[in-house]
Image 1 (cartoon, rainbow over the protein chains, first blue to last red):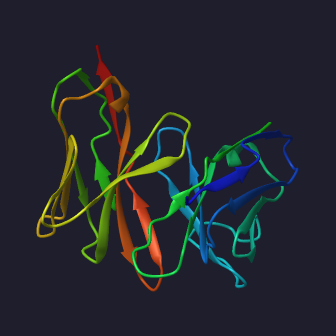
Image 2: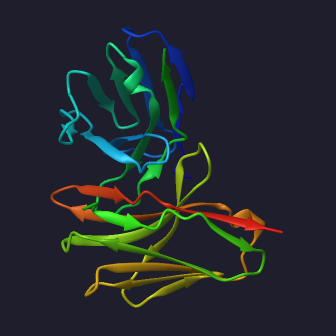
Length: 116
Length: 111
């Protein structure tokens, strides 16, 4: 159990286009989903936390108008990178957690974005 | 100063060796602690939680020293399959869980 999927697993796009990444919890309901970004040889950095049905909470330095997050249901969250640029090329990973204290976060397999 | 600091390595060890990784964290409000394993180009996977009393899972032993804000992971009898990056992770809870990841320590086990 506790499987999280992401789609697509990789994407290459031209500069200026928008890219949508989906994160789904397949066998449990996730009240909270998290979006991370990982640049090569660096740690995962939390971008935003989203709770189903409410606005996402963005970390300092993350532009909410550039990284649009929608958490419309208990099993789906989407991250849209708008007007992508080469510096947005990174590994984007989502995780999902159920409600309650100290619950484990289950990570998706990640999406590798390359912006040309 | 980074919130979670680790020696990036790499640690190159032969099969069967014992290897230890250390981690320090700066936020004294950190609530819970974990070691994750991340293979190249893959998502991180939970290896084990870390408790103040110390805990063991097979060949893996984790220790936490809250006073020193220090976490360790010991791997005994290293296997080739242990080659990966080991991430030290702390959970800072301000209303909602927030995981802070270290940059990881790379382990390479050779035959």
